[in-house]
Amino acid sequence: MYPLLADLVLIVHLTFVAFVLCGGLLVLKWRRVAWLHLPTVAWGAVVEFTGWICPLTPLENWLRTQGGETSYRSDFIAQYLIPVLYPGDLTRNLQLLLGTVVVVLNAAVYWWLWRMQADDVSRCR
Image 1 (spheres, rainbow, N blue to C red):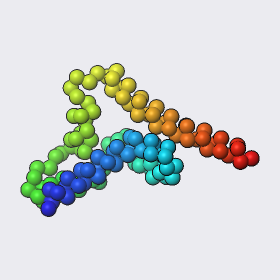
Image 2: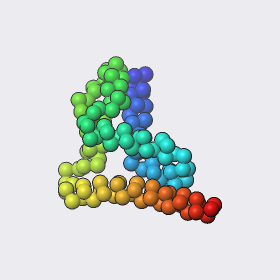
Image 3: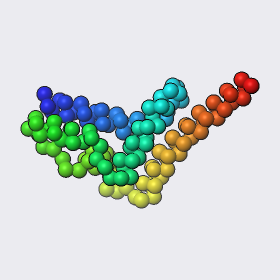
Image 4: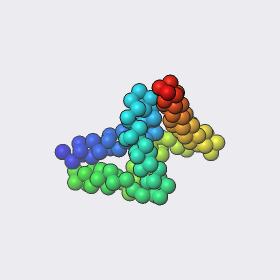
């Protein structure tokens, strides 16, 4: 049962990371999602900028060791995402481009939403 729970935590963690990166797109359809998305973005940024370990990582590792599997010493991002996001042949310029795409995409979504809301308010006056 423990390995299954560890895999479930892994899926939740991956879903959380995807929501941090792309949740702004859901806000286009459901504006109230912003109330959930913005705090998750803040949490994700704080964890990355401070070097903290997300609490889901130790939970997954504990579940894996309880199930007789091997845990990992690094954090979730280093274990699962860095090998995918940062393959050995990734150049610094491509890395900067990918980071810029994430920032610009979310900024564009929220700017567009802000403009739509401003237009709605001006029409009501």
